Each structure stands twice: as C-alpha cells, then as structure tokens.
Image (cartoon, rainbow, N blue to C red; front, side):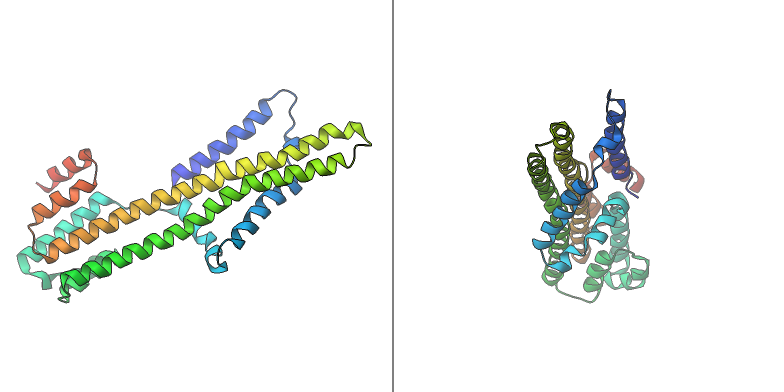
Length: 259
C-alpha cells in the first residue's frame, strides 16, 4: 500500500472540505451538483476513450491499482542478491547458478541469469534484456498517458459545463432572483474540473512516472549485474559498480555490512 498517495489524497480532500465548512455563510450543499460532476468526469473519460484504443483505456483499473498498491523495489537488497550470486559463480562456476534459480523471485533477474547459464552470447543477453526494458517502459507510458489525458480534458469540460450553465441562466433572465444561484451552479463545473485534474489525475500520472523510473532503474541494475556475472568480474567490483545507483548513505552502510 502506497501511504504517500493515500495520505496526500486524504489530506487534499480534507483541506477542501474543511475550508468550505469554515467559510462564513458557506453551505456544503452549495458545492454539490451532480449534473456538473457528470459533465466533468463523464466528459473527461469520454474524451480519453476517444484518444486511444479501447484495449488501452480498459487497462485503467489495473493502472489505478498500481498507484495505490505499488511497492518500490528494494535496491540495496537487490544488489546484495546479485553480489551473492556473483560470489557463487566466481567460486563454483557459472553453471552452479542453475541450482539457485528457484531462489530468485525477480522474473527479469531469472531471465538474464538463465540465458547466461545456457551459454547465450553476452551481446544477445544484453539485447534481449534491453528489449524487455523498452517494452516495460512502453507499457508504463501508455498507463501514464491515460491519467495525463484525464488531467488535460477535465478542466476543459469544466469550462464547457460553465458555458452550458451560463447559457441556461441567460435563457431564464425573466427571474432575476435566480441569476445568483444560476451563476454559482455554472462556476461549480469549473471548480470540479480543476479539482479533478489537479488533485486526482495529474498527481496520479506523476506517481506513475515515479513508479516507472524506480522499476526501470532496478531493471538496469539487474542488466548490469547479469552482464558482470557472465563476464566473470570480481564480486567486490560488481558491488561497487552497482552501488552507484543508490544514495551514498545507503551505499556506505551496505559496504560495511558486506565487509
């Protein structure tokens, strides 16, 4: 569970609700308008569906779950595992890793090591693994595009809803007492569009970008580790090379534990 997403989302909603309730003369009911919500949310989803293949759009559920349920890769632990495998390969030979494959729960690491154990040329191993990295990046980009699109279209449909409200209001000018309430309802749609975009969609898209960078970094670490193991490099040198991917504080503590 991603606590940052849950806390940030809850805090944003709570602050908006609290500011309404604390405003003198404000009524919470005045900020609730179902037709306006339908225009903003429904319109943004419809436009997003138009902008991409249906198969990509239907993946929104799984992509959305990743925002809340993602677990960042444990990079220090990953490096420790790679170094441990390198020590086995250095001491007993590359074929000895065959017996350790069942202990590897990372599919990408298992893929690279299996190719290395099978005697696949190093350039082929690198090519296959880089292709896999590019495929993952492409899938992540498609997921992020969904929420980027929702974030772009939300405010636009908020403005469309406001214009619709103004047209309705101006068409009923025979009752001057309804002008104030009609204007308020028209402006609510713009408010919904801004909130929908800036509290939900765009932050979700940015979070997906962070998740993508974390996963691609861990895959790059695995790629470099597999190539180093296949080349027979010293485990200590492999550790020093891969440690450059983590902050100096964690890097120093990891080196102390290894020593």
